Image (cartoon, rainbow, N blue to C red):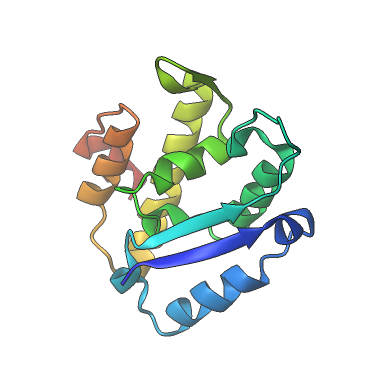
Length: 158
């Protein structure tokens, strides 16, 4: 069952994560995270000044909020709805990038590589602790960003 978490301007400015904890902590305590895999999305209701052309990931306050969220839940990509674009949007909040009208989002290649590999290490350890098979899932995640991972990498990590 999909879950959408609404974020307001006030919650973002206050770095308020309480509503996120109210959703995710029961899943953690019930050990039901697997049933919520790729089911989480965010509805960001952030008030911009009229005429402000920025995309949401270009707003420092929103990016800071997502940096804080990532610190609380570094394994959150496991829950994000990849098909709905939540993983890419989440990544845009954490990785330097530029928007191009023709080509769309263009991540800084070095920063993206560091981010993807950090998430691979984090999620590999977290999934092992949760007793969730992770290689195929993590390979799929890396492929979304143009990376092909070999089994040997996972052998080294584990």
